[in-house]
Length: 113
Image (cartoon, rainbow, N blue to C red; front, side, top):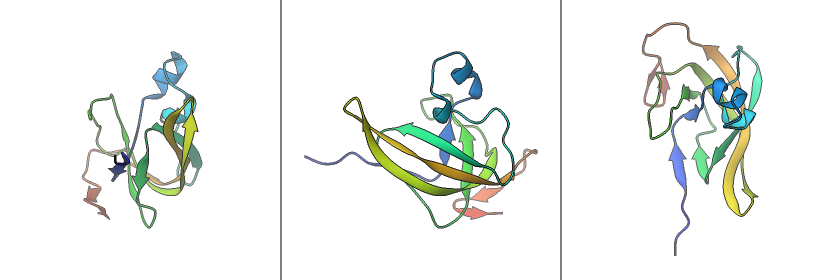
């Protein structure tokens, strides 16, 4: 028997409209307005591992690995595994380093360009 863990090279959250529609919790979604330097909470289902030693992309997901281009560069400040109704979740905090307003490439793997 193993332990199911997913390694994520980015943080992918749902559109804020899913929170407004009551489909997702606020921490499962992107903030309505993303601001440089601000710290936000996140919540992801399952046990996930994130890189904590540098910047990584913040993405929007529509599910089934349907991901946007990076919306921002962030630093994960903390990630903790918790049980909610006998299901494993990962919650944490991230700080926005830079919000992207163009369609340029901003990451090459883990390297911010």
